[in-house]
Length: 386
Picture 1 (cartoon, rainbow, N blue to C red):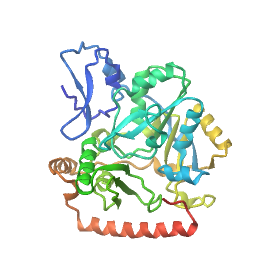
Picture 2: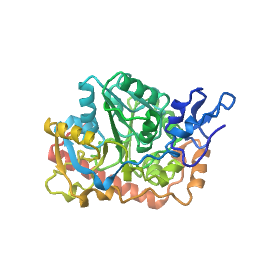
Picture 3: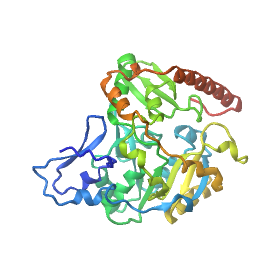
Picture 4: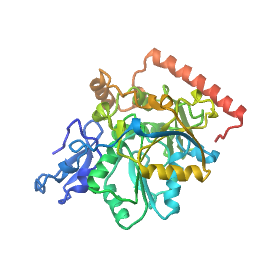
């Protein structure tokens, strides 16, 4: 039986908790991961229901009680390799330097999906940068537990709902577990992402790298960059690229994303995001290379944040509420035509053939022209560029 409740977040906590191993995550007809139960082997123990974050919602720390910083790495390379200011890399390196392990999202070997994995299997570079697609968790929660019980330091970075699922699965607190979520817009279907990469490969050949947060035009310009073994490069900005356009139009997100309020009371130690109000804080240099917004919610998070600041790896400016509350007072609205749009997207073979309004095309040109101008400004400032 395929469970299709709208509340499901696809975290996979049910998969890891099943004593019969009769639950797996499979894509449904819309391309989203959903739990599938082998009812012939199910013993109705209800273990899956007890760990499901839709059924067992954890109470976290209110965002209004957190301490917030604008952070950017002193290393230009660290900033460039991250989606914003390089904060995730600095967190991860502290865990790795202690012999620990970092869990996060990486592209699959064929680059057509995103999977939860660890630095025991991939490089830290593979876990860096935002991936605008839902990730396949598989057995990752079991792997996290095994690392914790072997007394290794563990950093787990995921969506707020994945962290809820992990904590429900673990059933207890671990002093050696550090949790990091991020300001999540919502997750598009894995099936759509596979179609997008397949469409690009039909035009340019086998893909060798994917970057949804390329800084080719600077940090402030959302840009999708895909490099191919043929030597060709696909580079399009927010309104020109169909995947980014659908993502920001909220047309292709999981149903549960539209009602999610988890970041309002995060159960993580630290929340990461982009600090888009950098122009409002005169003490921060607006270089367009990336500034992280870092929310600290727990004593564990404060200790880690203080260590990084004292290490001189970054510049950090504590923020007043007026500078960061924008990130918590906006919501992801559900388009009225979402069902129709999803059906249309699922029926076409090529997402690049989807119709684009004249208004959107004009927005695309304006956005691209602004991005080009921003790139020129970065060069004048002597900014880091690749």
